[in-house]
Length: 173
Image 1 (tube, rainbow, N blue to C red):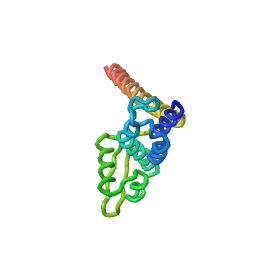
Image 2: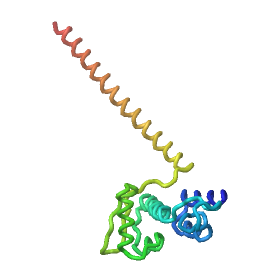
Image 3: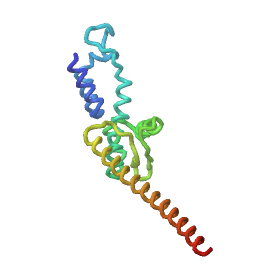
């Protein structure tokens, strides 16, 4: 039971909807809708419909993080297959749901039947994410130090100019 729960958590962390459905097919007894008795020893009280919806959103976020990084758009057919949507209206509802929950920014182009995802919430935060964050912070620190140095030099130069003007006024007297 605990091994199955760990596998489910791993799927929720980095899997896709197809992985979740395969898990559900093998471990349906862990879910309340599939269990005859919610008090059975194997049932964990998990709701398949809620997790199914969340896995759709997480899968879409995974697509979104790749699209935002690579600048790709996705066809309706590819997204419908990955999200197990039967119609374009269902796909549209999933994308709008993700946008409403502020998981991604996207536009739906009905003419070319594509979804252009411009930005998405990062689904996982692993070692590479920490490295990227460290690089960005280091770059920000360098830029901040440069700006502070420029501001300091500008202030020092203004102070020097004021001293020079005072000295010239004193010489003229």
